[in-house]
Image 1 (spheres, rainbow, N blue to C red):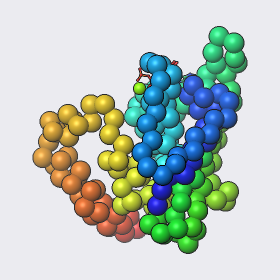
Image 2: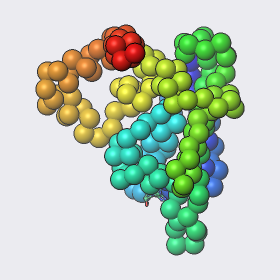
Image 3: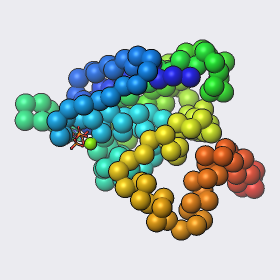
Image 4: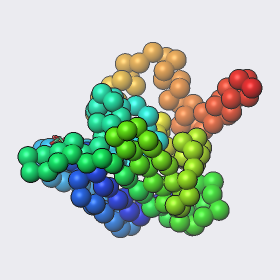
Length: 180
Ligand code: ATP
Ligand code: MG
């Protein structure tokens, strides 16, 4: 499984449609302060189902929608789309190539699509759970996260280990079963 491309439109500082193709190997993103490097990482988090506006450095989720610049009016919609090579079926899906799209409108309407078919947030979360790249994974380590893990309570650290070990999925299924 590999990230092939990322398409960002109306998300944070990316007003116009911007496509980043990831070639095999390592990709580095460089640029001056405030040029949007962190916004790119946040777009990846967001499309994989991030629900915390705070994690995305906002107060409310609508803060991710392009809110205008000196020469540009705010936009009404944020859209992020990632394309993944899933030919090894690392992600639990029959598709060899997967596109995941998330949209959010100012009126609060939102949509998730997998290969252009509408799905629920739960489907997105399930797709990425235990893959190591989902919204609660540790493949994206933001500033302060390392210190938070080291300084955290033992129970919080245990949660980290359980996620890495792949136990999180079973705990989630157990919680869901107990609710029924
Ligand atoms: P640094 O090197 O300082 O970490 P960076 O390249 O990571 O910088 P970002 O934090 O990704 O930069 O981008 C910050 C910019 O994104 C700011 O100029 C901010 O105004 C802009 N920005 C954030 N949210 C929005 C939004 N909703 N609409 C328009 N611009 C936004
Ligand atoms: Mg940054």
